[in-house]
Length: 132
Image (cartoon, rainbow, N blue to C red; front, side, top):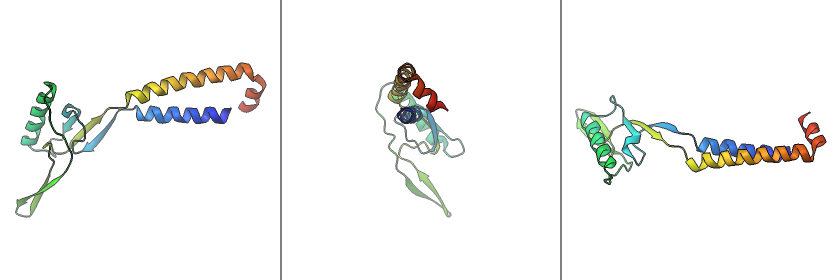
């Protein structure tokens, strides 16, 4: 029984991890531009202005595109730049955790607790031996 409960609790940990919010640095990889913050050192004023405008448009319910692909641009004099289609440069993406995973983790934790209580009552000697 302990082995099964161990597997269930491992599933809880996996679900909890899937439910955690996270941050990722790079090009914009989120649907909502408000979940992206351009890095002032790795974006131009134009890119930050485009980001601000897209945030305002998105807040009004207008459709925008934040698809990720890169274009290399020759700036001359041996310099080049990488341009992303959404035009925000590099920055921080705030990734939201999966709410369903958090809910399932909570539910499974309660189920495991109920199983442990039942096992303590149904098999008291076996549970004592397992803990030693």
